[in-house]
Image (cartoon, rainbow, N blue to C red; front, side, top):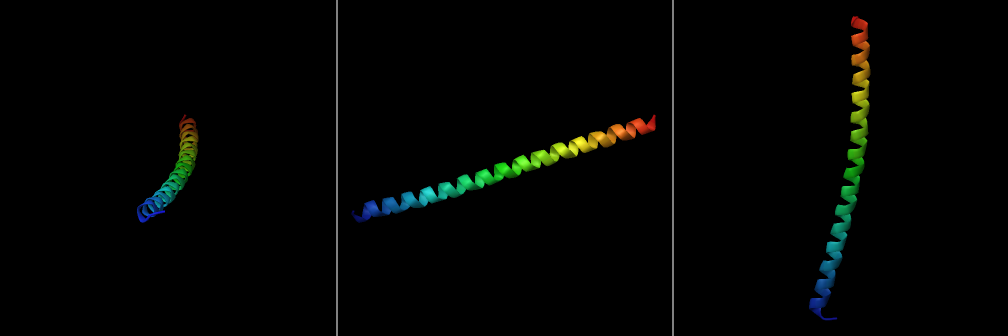
Length: 59
């Protein structure tokens, strides 16, 4: 293997490692987004319950 091929292979390996890190980071962000979405839904449900409860108490 000549020097140019070695350099190309090394760059390819570095690129693949970087892409793998990016992929893992994106997966982590997706999981966090799902968790945040669930928390948001729960907060909305709680607010709706509180709003409904306070409105029925006003009557």
